[in-house]
Structure formats: C-alpha cells, structure tokens
Image (tube, rainbow over all chains, first blue to last red; front, side, top):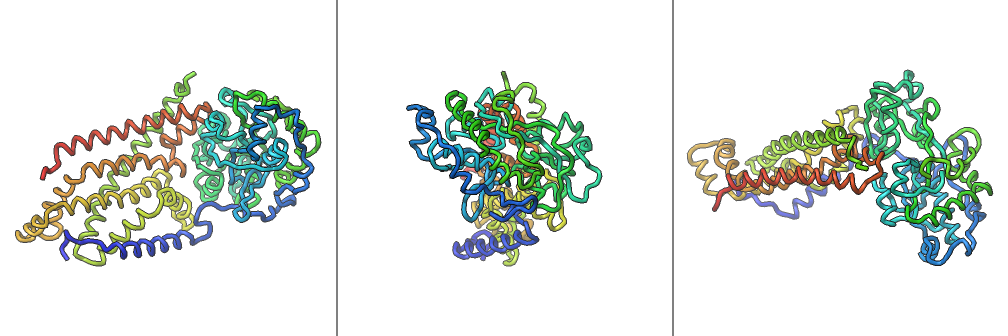
Length: 324
Length: 214
C-alpha cells in the first residue's frame, strides 16, 4: 500500500472509534468520582440534624391559594394561571436549595419548594417548569420574559435592581469559608489574605474577596460541585461560598469543613421582570402570607434546617434590602 | 453608565490570557498534527493504527468533557497540573486531531508521482516527507488550517469552565457586578470576532502567497 493512497474503510473506522471511546470512558470511570462531580445520592437522607431535605406533601396541601380578586384580567398572574404552570429559572445542582433527583426528576430544596408554593398560590396546584439557567443570563432571561421568576439564591444588589425587579428578600445568608478537614491554619476569612481561594463563577465571593482578603488569588469554577472537587484536590486552600451551600456540601463530603461564621450578609430575592410592579406586589404579598402562617418556617426546617443548627430564623422584612 | 469603564484592565488581562492560550495551543496542536498525520501515512501498520485511534478518540469526545476529565480526574491519580497548563494540553491534544486530518488531506493532494520521484532519487521516508511532500501539502490546506485555528480560539472559552481566567471568565466577573449580560457578552463576542478576523486575514494572505495553482 502506497503512503499516499491509503484509504480508510469506514466500517473499520467506526468500530475502532467506538472501541476506543469505550476504553476511554472506562478509564475515566476509575478511581471513583472520575467525572469530577460528586453529588448527593438522590433522595437519600442527609446525615446531620435529621430530615431528608424534602418538604412533605402536607405542606403543599395546606399552602394558600390566591383569591380570584387578586388575579385581575390581563395580569401576569392570569397568564400563568392560563398556562397552568410557573416558569422558574433556577439550578438543579444545589443541595438543599434546588437539587434534582436523577431518578424521579423532582427538584427538591428551599428554593425549589418556594417556587412550587408560589405556583400553587397562582394556579392552585404546585406546577413548576424549571428552566436551568446560568448565573450569567438571569437578567437577560427575565427581561426577555423567558421565565416568570428566578429562584436561585439571587443576591439583591442595586446594580441588578436597575435591570430587573426583586421581590423579597425571602432569605438572608452570607458568605462563609470552607477548608479541607485536615487544615488547621485557616479559621475564618481573616486568614485568607494572600492565599489561593476557590470561588464559584459569578458568585458574590468574586467581588467580596479582594476587600476582605487582600492579596488572595481566586480560582473560579463554573459549578458548585466542581468547586468542591477543586478544594478537595488542593487547587485552592479554601472555598468561599454561601454558608448554606457550604454546610450542605460539608454534610455530604466528609473531607471538608466550614470554618467561622458568615462574614457578609446576602439578601436573596426572587427575580422578576422590572416592567411589572403589579406582579412584584403580588409576590411580596404571597411571601408575607407564607411567612405569617408558618409555611416558610416549615420549608426552611425541612431543607436548610437539616444542616444548620438552631431553629428557623426570622425571615427578613420584605423590601429591607437596597434594591428590593 | 458604561459597564466597561473601570474594568478595562481586568478585561485586558482576560483578553491577553485568551490570546496566550490560543497562540501556545495553536503552535502545540500544529506540531502534534504533523506528527499524527505522519503516523497515519507511515509504512508501519502499527503506527498507522495508533494515529487512527488517536484521531478517532479525540474527535469523538466533547472538548468540555475532556477538560473536566483532565482537570478533575487526573488529580485522583495524584497528577495535578496548573489550570492554564491543563487547558492548554487538552485543547492542543483535541485540536491536534483536527490539524492532523487537515494535513492528511493536504498530503492526499500531492501527486503520487512526487512521492515516487522522491523515492527514486534515494530519499528516505522522512526525507521525502520533509523536503517534498509536507511543503506541498501545507500549501494546499492553509485555509482549512486557518479555520481550525479560529475554532481553537473559540474553544479556549471553554477553559473558563475549569477555572482559567480568560476573556469569557472575565466577562462573567464583570457581569456579576454590573448585571448587564447582553452588553458585556456582546462586547466579549466582538473581541472574539476581531481575533478571528485577524486569523482569517493572516491565513488569507498566506493562502494568496503560497497556494499552488494547479
């Protein structure tokens, strides 16, 4: 066969390709967690203060539904009711906040449950379609009305409030520091100056760190599971992320621990379209209602309450954050 | 309010990282492409198979999957590279497969008589490749290789997903504060477009100067 007229027989090519991919995939699967994204087994009980992290059906059954008088003709609420489901922008990979069970396909967690409760309030049944969105495009999607709401630990900031509207705040959290279990030198954010720190792309940690930890070098990862993996593999000495998220990560990853208390205050709001003050008022009224009747506390207890000590906190006052 | 003012240094750094990653990776991928293309046409059947398997595996796995595997799975085996290096290695390996195929296509355009003549005057396999076949092969596929370089440039943005702070990642960071995704990402997109145009112009010029008109 001449060096220049070698022609491939396609069938053999495909067979070789398929075999080689199989080999590569098998190799990738070795060493456990080869995919680099450890997750909680769906629906498994989270060890800790007890509870499965899933809100009981009874809570949904007892949740309020808006009176017809609250849903005027032509309003966004009426459109959602006509459609029969609420379009929610959110995540599927945040334990205890919004995590999808790969088997049942259900999304469980604090954000996910609240979204379902809002859907019930508007439609009468907790019908939600989760649109998986990145942190990069939340404002764009809300402005384009591709989603009705965003429930995604969405920090209220004045800059964002010029683009979209925030109902709430519905939860207050803050940034905290996690390190590897064996780390004894970092006890809190004060020890991070000049250190390599893992952060999540587009999280408040990116902007907070230069001020609180001067000289720290950031290594950003796209998703929370990746960031956890990066911390455990020593790509940074600490991981700065929302306290609740870190707490749930620490529960399922014995190799890491949370050190110190949250060092910022992050008010989380429900992202809405800015041109629709009527809808914002409606959502705020619903928040006030579920806070008053104890539904909010039940949801918190069943989700975040399984990893945070002490009972349910007092929910933040509606409109108390700059930009809400 | 202009979301770019005040972030120009940061965005500049991101752009520089993107350019660095593109240049380093293109050079490495090109060298790798020559090696793999040579393997695919060499007289030794085993080496031909090695080249074939390499190309088929690399072309049939998504780049993002390769990046994630390389960055997160290798440390499980105790091998950890810096993030920029990791991204450069993976993108070079991936694009090398594409370069190899382009170069092989170029080799196939060289007339069989050329190879026979080279052998007739006593050149070895490597000599005939180096002095006769490859120079002509390259000239035939300048434009396709330019296209692969442009694809490579776009693919560097995937490095953002594994922690490399390049242009896309920087745009993300700026957007986090300013919450103006359409404006910021359009700006970043324009920067990518300009870089791609530069590559296109360079290859176009090379093409005009070097192409063999048959």
